[in-house]
Length: 289
Image 1 (tube, rainbow, N blue to C red):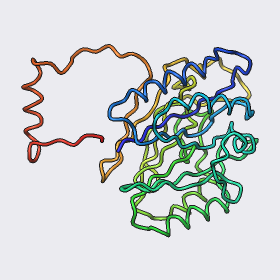
Image 2 (image 1 turned 90 degrees about the horizontal axis):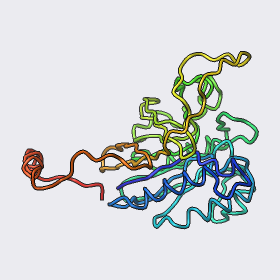
Image 3 (image 1 turned 60 degrees about the horizontal axis):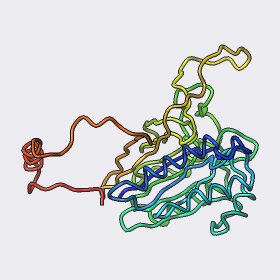
Image 4 (image 1 turned 180 degrees about the vertical axis):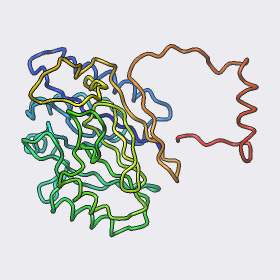
């Protein structure tokens, strides 16, 4: 099963621009995803759906997503606004005022978390949200589970974007997860870069954004002394494909741009492919379908 992920669209950053740069980048990314064969089973958009929390931008997002032929599941980030989101996407059910929900597939359970605290850039995870997560995990303690959220609960090395590991919401999330060995991965947005690390006995990965990326700048930052470092760069829009093989979740990252092809599967490479496949048990291979 393939699970596609995009994140940090920031639609409406240029609210009055008919050909908004972020909308162009979103459209290119969706076109790339729609052309994938085999098609993803679903798409998660992991927060910062829009930039200013306004209803008009959510409406433009709904319009843009109409081209996607597979299910789309939305997650809230720190640039989102719950009331305006609800007014445009009324099919989503909020629990205790938070957008947290479950998706059940034959081989994998998916739990979506809400880490939005309106007015705050960083993450949040209150007692009500933690209780919901803990209850869901206790329902099926051995079921393979994927956690989806906007904010990475780990320090990723880019000082102005970091999560401080001592933030109370991080420990509250860790406590809710407990020692469940069934969490196969946690996939996030927010950082505008592809990253991967270990945390709480599982893997936490973040997806590159469809909006411009955050520059890879790891030097300490002084909030009182601008130093003209790069912050945002116009690298190509990116996405993630998470391949669930029935045992592990394998993450691939790619960009929505043309790639220079140096080799194709033609008659000259047939022997190499045959040899590689024949080395496997039963001479077979597994696809992402």
